[in-house]
Length: 347
Image 1 (spheres, rainbow, N blue to C red):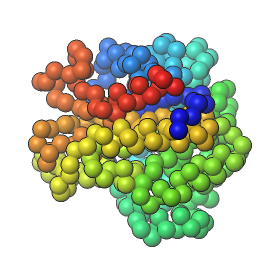
Image 2 (image 1 turned 60 degrees about the horizontal axis):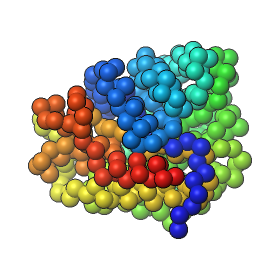
Image 3 (image 1 turned 90 degrees about the vertical axis):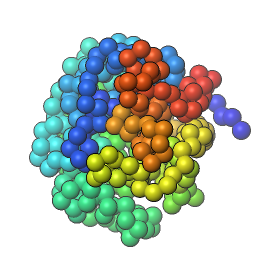
Image 4 (image 1 turned 180 degrees about the vertical axis):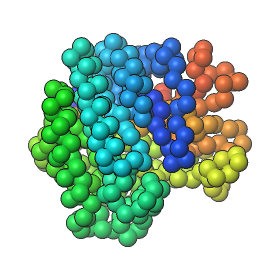
């Protein structure tokens, strides 16, 4: 059954370069001419009316946001400092708030996202010295069972304390709407925020309760945005959800997939459309597909080295020596690109 679209924000995530577990950036070069083209494609070919712009370098996020705002897209301004301590993260968020207010006062149509899944990407909330350790601890079987059963987790108290102090200072610097991109394992005091925002992936372990989870957030009485949802590009990736990326061995001289996987763009496209239908039915305020491009997950004709299988991007990264979708664009659309564009166009 088709449902009438009620989403205010039909969006996608756009990365300007985020620090990875290995210390590199997901996007090494930042070329303004290319950013203009890609933002234009997001608006005119994907038919999005909003974009969540993220990245580690605040100035990169500012420039990309300016380009999007000039094209009359609503921007979720989402700089993200990965794998640092709470003190440095606090200072970084306040810098982001000041930059966001400059943009908001000029353009409007901007919402500030004060961090993303801080319990994983910032030290001191969850046990683990590194981001990799914290991810393993949070997504291990024992921890997942605790989350599903609703057992109280001590890291939530530490997170709430951090967010309370942070939002108090952010509000002094930023006069627009504020939200936080939360993982589903985080129990946030949403009274602090104007919108509820969840990175909400469906996987085999939560498929049966996925809609019930959505409804529990909706029942809090504030607009609900899904700031991330997506699927990788191989058979079975729809069951992996947010952990679909973890099939690459980056320690090899030439990174390769851990085992044998079958490329499947239909799985990715179907996943996105199914969840968009769910979001429409549940009257979600906004949804942001994860993601436009994973530039460091490069496609290869040899399945062993086809890192794009582990990418949530709706376009596949290709080497510059090949011809891309358009002049100077080193990527080619996947089936999800066309499916998403058609869906948003019709709805």
